Structure formats: structure tokens, C-alpha cells
Amino acid sequence: MSMSYNVTYLKSLQAVRERSHRVYELAQRGQLEHFVFDESKIDDVADYVLGLVHRDYASIASVPPHGRWRSYCVKTPEGDRDLVAEHVLKWKASDVSEWECARRVIDLIMVSVLIDAGAGANWHYEDELGVFERTEGLGIAALRMFERGVFSSHPHNPFQADARALLVLSDTDVARGFQVTDSNPLLGCTNRAQLLRNLGRALSDGSRYFGGKCACNNHPARPGFMLDYLSGCTEAPLVVSIDDVWDVVIDGLACVWPAGRTQLDGVALGDVWACDTLDVGSDSERQRADTLVPFHKLSQWLAWSLLEVVVKLGKLKVSGTEKLTGLPEYRNGGLLVDMGVLTLSPADLARGLRDGSSVPVFEGGDAVIVEWRAMTVALLDKIADRIKAKCGLPSDQLPDMFLARVLEGGTWKAGRELAARMRPTTKDPPIDIISDGTLF
Image (cartoon, rainbow, N blue to C red; front, side, top):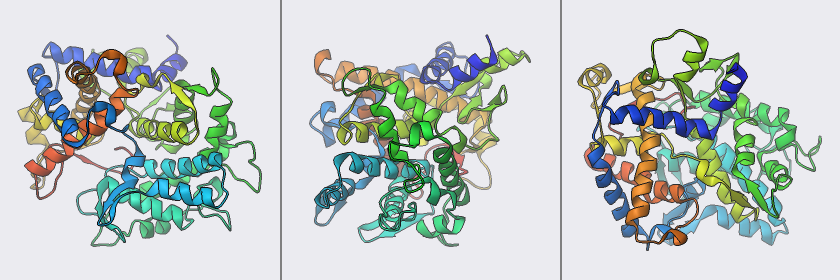
């Protein structure tokens, strides 16, 4: 097995699911290193999540897919508003083509997702629509920067993100856009700015994906031009494979992620980590590769988010979306801990409690976090399977992107609501991660 094969495999969606399920199999045998696993409580989680679905929607088929667009569907005193849809209507009224509207929304979604790592409990964003925190606050802040042309080099069109503008984006530009002050700190703000500059470099270097049919000196590379690339990848009329979407995200954006993370065969792998649960004690390079667990959380969050735009505005169908996994982040993972499916070991609990913190805190690459995230990926599959069996719909009536609807309806919401109920002061998850603004 060559190193190049290992690198290709670890960057694949297949590897995310397979490696996480290897950890799950060990959990079933009581061989986790950092958590106690109670398989009997998975049904309780599925029932709780399905209860939220029935509370908020007619059925699981009515739940929209999990994606960044949801952050722009806001409640106001005047009623519910879809801020993205409002922009699309205005652009069309100004004779902007539907294809260009789709490109613009992809531009927005990509920058918005890349800055969507945990903001911390002490940051907020004040807007004319209200005060927003965490992921919603980051989303609204990104939208307002997009509207002001912070990401655009076009003198007459603020509504785009392009390589030329992103490459020169300063830390101050980003801090100002997020309203960061000493009393309103945002975790990893400078790292978020660097991610956006890295995005500018990826766009500039990735003409295959982001050059577009009209890219030239007057039309610098944009995320939205990926739609032009995908339109040339159709395997049937208007049908594109999720593998082509994933190629754009995982290969086209490879240089976005910090280079100091896990490397194999000289290649930076991104959100891929050594998992001591899989360690068999060998020092060989091949065995080391076998202990690595990929998550690609922000990349998958981006892929889930782009699908909605590609389908709704780009009018393409996407096949194979079941290859995407649930997102291993602290709301989905927190749900599993708060409902007793996973219990942190006493030794790790003691190690994680520091500086008077009310919950254990670990670095993103800590073995606890890696095992937690792997179990989260696998358990989201198990929960989705149980919800399929319990939701009352025959198999031929189950909606597409089922897992994305479970996340939205859903596990992510359940994790957030339980955190707010159990830790009302901070609303933090039961295990906290020291965020650098680039992970999750």
C-alpha cells in the first residue's frame, strides 16, 4: 500500500465513515480509551431527536437539509425572513441571471462556512435584526461584510468574493467585520482572517475549479465559478456526482487549512488526527497511517451547505449524497455526552478540568477529542437509522439527504437545547475545545 494511496484514502469521504466505524466497533467491545459507551441509550437519543422533529415540523420529510443557508433564515418582529432569498429576488429584479445569482450565493456560503468555527461564549454580533451569538452571529457578520463588498474587488459589485480581494484581506478588516473588541473577543479571529487569505490563494491557484468560463484579469477567480466546473461534470443531463463536489472542496481548497497539522508522505491532510484507540503499538509508517482518523468537518459542512445552492439555484441534481457523514462537532457530540451514550473516563475528566472551568477542556488534537469525534460520526449514522425505522414513512417516501435532515431537525438542535438547559450560564457543551478558529 503506497503512501500516495494512503493520502488519497484519508482525504476521501469513505475513510471518514470507515475509520470512525472502526472506533465504534472497538466501543462495542468495551475497548475505548477515554469514554464509557452505553449502546442501550441510542434509542433514547433517537426518540428525543424525533420528538424535536415532530415539535417543529410536520415530519422528517419537512425538515430542510442542514446547511449554512439556515443561518440566514431569521425570526424578526415582522415575521420570518430568508435573507439569502431576499437578495436573490433583488438581484433578479436587476436583471442578474439565475446562474450568476447561484454563483453569488456560493461566494457567500463559502466564506461564511470557512469562518464558522466555534466563536466562544463571550462574543456576539449586534445587527439591525437583533443580537446574534455563535454560529448565527458569525453567519450574519459574514453576510454584512459580503454586502459591503469586503470580499469583492469589483468596483461596482459588492456581492461577490474573489481571489484578488481575499488575498489582501487584513486582520483588521476581519476584526472590524466581526465587531471584535477587548470586551467582545472572538476566538481565533486572526486565524479566521488567515483562512480567508488562504482561500484567496486557493482560488487563484485553482483555475480548474474556480476559474470559470469568464475568468480573466477583469473577472478574478471566485468560489461561485465552481458551478461552471460542476456543469461540465454532469454524468447525466443536469446530474452531478457528490464525488465531483467533494473534489472541489477537498482538493481545490487543500491549501486553505493550516499546514502544521497531520502530514503524511509530505502532504498536509487537514482535519485528520492520530487516534490512540486504533494504535496497535507499531512505529511503521504504514501502521501510523492506519491510526489516523479523518473528519474533514468544515469541508463537509461546506459540502452540505453548497449542495442546497447547487440544487436550488443551480438547478443541478447531485447523486451519491449519502456518502457525506454527520458532522463531528460539539453540538452533535455534546448531545451524546449529555444523554449518557458516552461518559468521559474519571482520569480524563480530572485532566480536563482546569483553571476553575465547569466542564473539561481539551485541545482540538487531544486523544479525548479525537475519540469523541469518531464516535460522533458513527453514532449519528446509528441514530439516523433508528429514526428511519421510527419516523413512520415507508422506505420509498424517505426524503433525500436524510442524514442532513436528521442533523437539522435534529441532533444539532438537540445538542444546543440540552446545553442551554443543563448549563444555562454559558450554554457550552459538556466537553469544551480550545478553539483556534480553524477547526470546528
